[in-house]
Length: 420
Image (cartoon, rainbow, N blue to C red; front, side, top):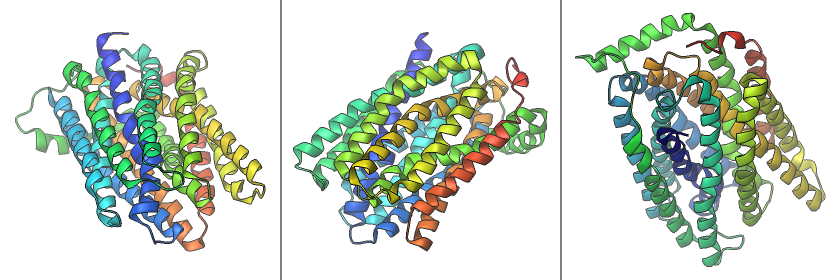
């Protein structure tokens, strides 16, 4: 790999710690058990879902404008660093929120997640600058793979803090707050190589009125998207299936807590997922060169359908041992598909777009992803509140995967390869 490719991949190691600790593992449990203590379980889970939906909505509204403005020379890195620093700052401030202040906690979490996701728009857009179209599947898959295995290091450190703090099935508040600081510093520290190395190669001509021209280009791109029918069709498929993927990642521990699984079990299972996801992300990248990225995306969607059905029926298992075994089986399926489906979606889309407009097009890519990420957690939270049982919200995700697979099957891959 080139120096630029290595440092681009290293940023995935940096920001994946935020996903694992703050979005997936510790923060959801911390919110439910500490910040929202006293609230009914399904209400706390619903509020967590609404917060994640709000973060996705905020970024979805900002992404097209930011992406369009970032395609001018030198702008991509400015926006990348700005959102990175904002995300790290609000991540660190979460360690200062007093227990019981659940609304303030959710507000800061939303801001931190907007910073994280905003930086990812420009990080994804740098893919066309750091490698060639032929290597995109491989490099994108390696980014997710090393991100998964790299994030295990700070995660294990946070787990160690929890055990030192005496947490069994109760989270030690002080240790959790130190863990939030560890995540922020890890995120910032491992971002420095990317900040120092990444260079914007593809860009649009300099404009004297970039802000006004960015809005014009957004409208023009929306009209010209018909020139990229396969890209638009793929985005429609992506909207649906990534909704299900993101919702499972975001709501997994909150759902597991509703089912009565202990904090220690949930943490160990998430650690297992991160470790198993590492080789499978690499495997998906390799298999995509043999069987095509579209084929591997369809395989990943099928596995997530099995995950959804299994999660729905999980509460019906009476025997505790069999329930735990089923939970481990579902975790393995998630791990085997999670990295591959995310990495190949990014590279599949990257080969469809003009490189000089990469930030703008990845802005639209993130719009579809973030608007999708609104509906899943919101739907799961809403159905949970209405029925008093979160598993009915889980079942709705199956529809999203089915629609996504159906639309993806219509994408003509022969128009994807070599498009640029």
